[in-house]
Image (tube, rainbow over all chains, first blue to last red):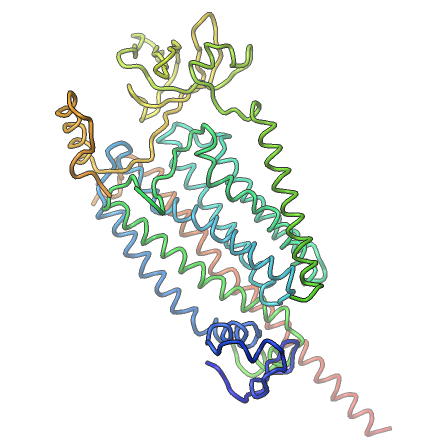
Length: 280
Length: 156
Length: 64
């Protein structure tokens, strides 16, 4: 994937690999591929092409995992001793909840890079994370309601876990709204990134809400380190669905980021060429 | 890192830190208002608000559930193994309501009895097939007099 | 089979939950495509207008 001696396209961050830039630290840097690759990826046309190639594979993998996970959860896994078949909502509710938090963290990190380093790609990625994160948060809230009504006896309660997850949803909407309120997309992205970063305090609140406060929502079932209080036949479909949702997120963000880059770089030669030459 | 970026980073982190502290302080200060439920011990100690509804949380005491015949009224006792509070509720109880189960009821104290307008069942974070649950219950019975140690075949 | 769809009596909660999952993610997958199509259409239009404008300017230079 590395091009040697190939001049980059005319643009802000053209990397001319034929000439190594005269940077005092550069010669001392070990010639590992990863930093080179990340720099290469930071250039919009490179990212655009890379993302376009990888995306279908990620989506295919996501679908395969989803089929396996859903079969394991809906067909193979036995009913729960306490909740009967109603617990099967876990296979979409919990992975979606995990994604709502993971995507927020990714958005905040990309937002930090956008704010401090002003990298265009980071701005695009941060802003495009928001709708996907909002989608997973919405799924979490709605499936949680549908699970709560038969099991707890209520669609909603203002306990710490549910309320903080709802706050997360509003934070996502806030980021989307703030971004779209600006004429200048770059300034809008920076403002929205600041909001995203500020909202990161909500993440430990969501996660530890069931530990710090008495709530209706039960504590954690799956623990990264230590004992998970779920039968193996129920755990593996849950983990497979978690993988499926992660793969889906990466496929989705790559697609959205491509469109975002086209929009941001619309005056550039590589975009004009892309739009007129091909029919895509 | 060049000085401009360093400045941006520091400003961002300062804002973030300020918000984190503000949130932490607010949450801490609002603890009493944010109290989701009161235990029987707290209600007995008078910590629960007088006059307006609050949530009482505890376990349904064994042998305390009585359904008043001819009506939808159920009387039971909520306990936290230290104090007991009698509860009366008219309405349909959730599927998971049963003796020994964690329950959260909303209502008011009237003459020593908690008159509930809403009864919610809480469930734990354990998921297992019925056969495993039965095996564990049976093993617990057999080990009742003994050490109460870990059951063989406990899951992951 | 009917047992599967009945979900132990909780079908009215379980299946709508799964429907929410698929519908929301389907929206997330397909909605950006519309935005992208609109964008490429706008860009092509802009480029075409610039071309006619520059062609017109070139012709004007020649005739004067």
